[in-house]
Length: 55
Image 1 (cartoon, rainbow, N blue to C red):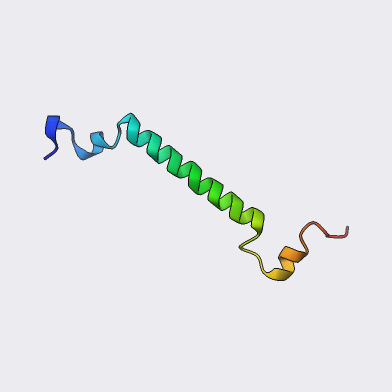
Image 2 (cartoon, one colour):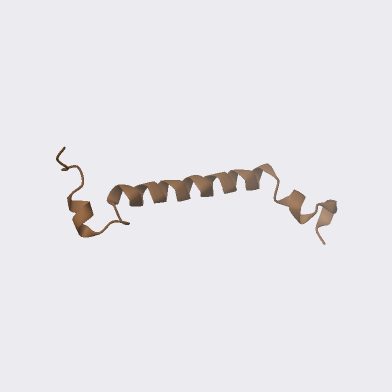
């Protein structure tokens, strides 16, 4: 059992954990954004065509 009568749910709700969770989310978001900027989810042709589309 957790000392001081904190349940697991209350334990994870402390500011320290909130900070850690928030940082983790931001990190993931940044990672995904960076991957999208590099075009990792596109094939070579689509990557090459980037920014050179004729109207």
